[in-house]
Length: 321
Image 1 (tube, rainbow, N blue to C red):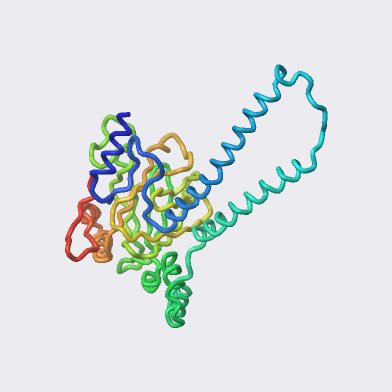
Image 2: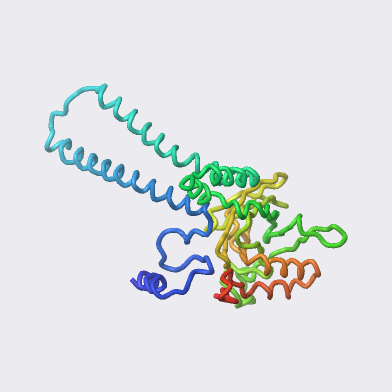
């Protein structure tokens, strides 16, 4: 009851959710920050409407068998081995249910797995507008953002190590042509000397930073064992495998702080391998990158501790909970 009251209070009185973190007593998944996560949540609800009737139906069948066909009420059982109609039903109906699930599952898998062709996104959006198909344009822009597509991808490589992450921005280079790269370490590793700053087991010293309203294409690999790059609010989870480069993508419109963790058992400190992603406006991202390239990592981290709002009327929105 205490956890339920805390969750209700948080839902009623909390400010806008700039930080996506697990909360005690909460129900369901973290609020979706990307279209990928929204589609996953919708698919989850769709499956609930299927599994609940199935569960109720199976429960009724079990109760009917228990009550009508036990040895007391049915001392002389009927003897038969086949019923053609029943066998056809229990073969066809589950097959149709699976087809219905696949009709929703496969498009979602494709949407998540294949980074969009940004030039095709722009071309299709322009064609729909030119043809006057406003309804189709609205549906298309809900799935893909032509304005973000015009700005291109921001590429980030996340390499899993035992037990931290190395982030590389191949498109952001210094004067010598070396890309921006840094190691992100957890603030807590289960010791009494752990830092008291940040959110326990989720905060890091140097977070991954990306601009809001941009397509982010991430690559992930591992230096030692299999890790997994996962951020629940983004709806992404990609294994980082030694000797293999996997990729994924996401787009976040709302600036804020989002957390994840390594989601593949990777050794004794697996529980202390968090992912912290700061989504900031483009201008703030450019300033952060400039400081990182200059080697002033602490100043760069401090520059994104307070995240600038995308609304012109508001300068800053604190997200340091």
